[in-house]
Image (cartoon, rainbow, N blue to C red; front, side, top):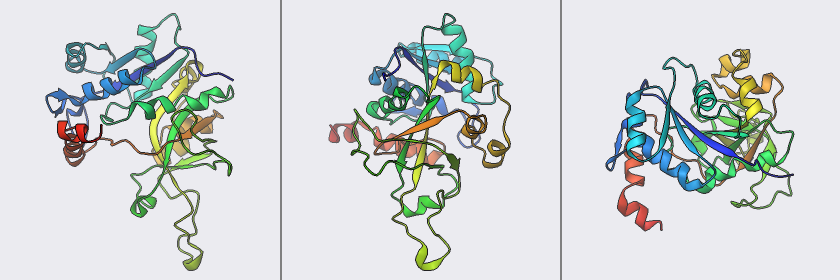
Length: 272
């Protein structure tokens, strides 16, 4: 088994956002948020990095930083649709065999976490790879904004490392606490039974992405409001690699303030 030969990182971005309008261009210490995300992807050194954007303002910000951006239709319903349009325009010859879909609101993602998403694709039967991290905050176990992945890592799985993270097949994703931990049955409840926080970062085999964007929205997808369930309902295989931390997703003004705190020059120097 071997890892993909020629990955490409695609970052979907649009200005329309209900809770934080104009989010990609939000200033973080003199740079737009989307530029911070682009820089993290470049630092991962996986292959070309392209921002698939809905508006020229985002493309201009990336170009000013020295990056590449592709303008797409503004009316795409999902980031997967947006990156597929950009991919077809950027690479019509199909040179890139794997497409990493990196959300444009993860300005603090560590390059090694991004690299870990390729590990499950060493197994040829895997269509889509993603990431999970064990939930450590008890409040997150029942929080519907924290998406959980139902999977079971082998008991003999090695400790997590950037080179060989544990990998398991994803059986379901939900906003509810799955698998069930006995909650509601008194003494049978066991908060030590691990639950896994799904990190919305995907590596698609190119053929899998081409198929995925042609599938209609599925019943479970609409019910849970989770796009990845469409792939599972269609019989596609998703495997997840286990990483240590969940990158901060910027969805609200409070998240943006936290990102500014984490990316402050003094904070970065103290972690080096």
